Image (cartoon, rainbow over all chains, first blue to last red; front, side):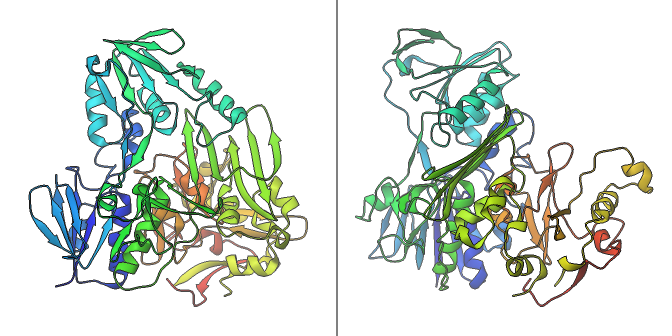
Length: 410
Length: 146
C-alpha cells in the first residue's frame, strides 16, 4: 500500500498535502503533529494577543480539512528517526510508519543562549506557538513589566501584541537596530521611532550578561527589572532527522528545486529547509510562510509522481506595527534608487539590469508588481523602468505584456 | 471560466467602474447615500497615462500566489473565484506584497478586499462591466484555465 508521511503539521505540511492531492486522490497521508492543534496560522499569535483574531479564526484550514484530504493526523507525536532502508519513520511511542515518500516539515525551534541565571527566572516564554502564547497571556497583567530579548520580527510583533495589556515593555537586542535581518540602519530607525511613539522602549547594541532572579544585568552594566521575560533571540532549523542519517545539512536541510533532500524519497520543506534564494543566487533558509506553502506544494506534487519545480524563492516580508507597514523583498545589492518623505521611504536595488530587492515603508500600493519583477527576474530594459521606479504600475509593461495580463491573450 | 477582461483601447478613463464597484459592494440601495461625499474604496481601479487607460481588478489566477501567501489562511478559491474571508483577514498586507497585478487593497478599516465578480452581492454580475459605457471591460469566456 502506498502511503505518504509528512513530519510536521504547519503551513508547509498543508502545501504538501494539497500538492499530493493535485495528482493522487487516494493514497493515505499520515501527518505527524507535535502540537496538539490542527494547523493554525503561526504568524497570527501576536494578533491574538491584540484581540484582532481568536483561535477559531486562526485555523489555517476548515475543520473538515484533514478528512476531506484523506489524512490521518497523529497529534502529540514526534518522529524520532527515519530508516531509509526499511522506508520507515519511527515515532516517539515506538510505532513505525511505512512510507513511499516522506516530507520533513519540522520547522524551527527557538534558539535560547545559555544566559547564566536564566534558570532563576520563573516567568520566561518563547513566542513561537499557540501554546507559548496562551502561557504568556496567562503570565501577564496590566501591571507587568516585560523584557523581550530580540528586536527581530518575532520580538517586535510580541511587543505590539502586548501593548496596552501590560505596564511596560523593553526590547533589547545585540544588534544596533531593530529588524536587523530585513532593514538597513535608516529604515530601522524609522520603524524604531514609530514603535517608541507607542511606548515600546529599546536597549539596542546591548545584551544580557546574566540574570539575578527578575533582574537582567546587561553587558553595558545597566540593569532591567522585569516580571515576565520573552525570549525571541532567534530560531534554528530542525534538521536532526536528516543529519542523523547522513543527509546534506547546512543551516537547514539542503534541498533542490524539487524539494528533494540528498536522500532518496525524502523531501524537506518550510523553515527546516535550505533552498535557493534566487535574488541572492545562493542557498538560504527562508523561514517565511509563503515560502513554506510553495515549497510544500512542490514537494507534494513531486511525491505524487508529478514534476514541479520551485525556482522563484526570495525573502519577502510584509510587517506592520501600529499602522506603519514595512515591505521588503530580495537582497539589497546593487544600484540604489530612493524616494523619501517624512513618513515614507522607498528603496529599490538594481543590478545587472534586474530588480534585486526593495524596502518600502509607509507607502506600498501595488508593491507586488515590484516583487514580481524580482521573482520573474524581468530584464528592466523590457519595461519602462523610469516610470516603474516612481510608481508600481502595469502601465510600465509593454502593450503585448499587458494584453496577456488583462486580456487573457495567451 | 468567465473572467473580467480589459479592452484598453476602448477605455475612456472615466472611473465609472470604480464607483459602480464601490456601490455594488456597499450593501446599500441608493448610490448617492452610499457614495456621495465619501472617499470610495473600490475593488477595481483605473491605471494609465496620457495615452492609455484601463481597469485593473483581480485576475482570479489559475495559480493564485495570494492564496499561497496569506498568513491568515483567509484567501481561497471556489469554482474559479478567488475569495477573501474578511473575518479572518488581519490586514498584514502580505497579499499586496505578492499580487503581481496590484489587485488587492484595504478598505477604510484596513481589512483587505478584492474583486469577487459581484457574484455574492445584490448585483449578481460584475457591476463594473454592467456600467461600463464603452465596453472597455467585459465579462466573458476567453478559454483560460480555471
